[in-house]
Image (cartoon, rainbow, N blue to C red; front, side, top):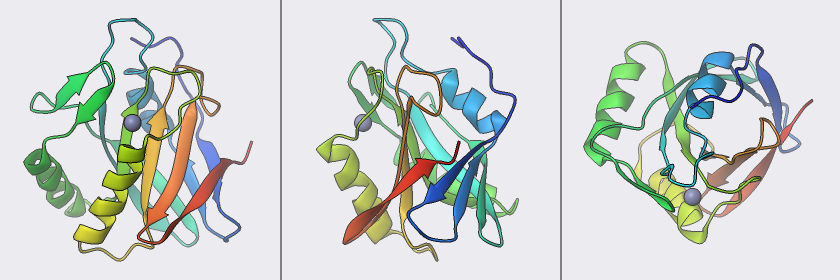
Length: 164
Ligand SMILES: [Zn+2]
């Protein structure tokens, strides 16, 4: 359960581009609720949805975890049909799917090889207008220190760094 509540947005830079990413308090608190503080807490995850405003990507919603997902201490496998249902439903509300989030039981999180493989795979297989998909991983440290964020596309990766 929550150790800390977030009242202000966190701002990030996407590589050396003009684009920035904003994580709103609603999204930070949703994810913080599932940080793996207890030895028994399983990984959790879901999808992140944003609105685009000029050069700013404003993440307004994080979904999941869902009852149909598979969760363990060191693993999280989302239910694919639930994901597609969310993408379609949010699109009608003007919220665009931009990537995935999940938790790790480590202080400052790092992506596993399979994390990177699956976000690249998702990017390749979907129809969209994005330059890449964002992978967000939450460790047990407070945010932004306890957050890993990166933009992945077929051939590479662009780092997303805290602006504060
Ligand atoms: Zn992972």
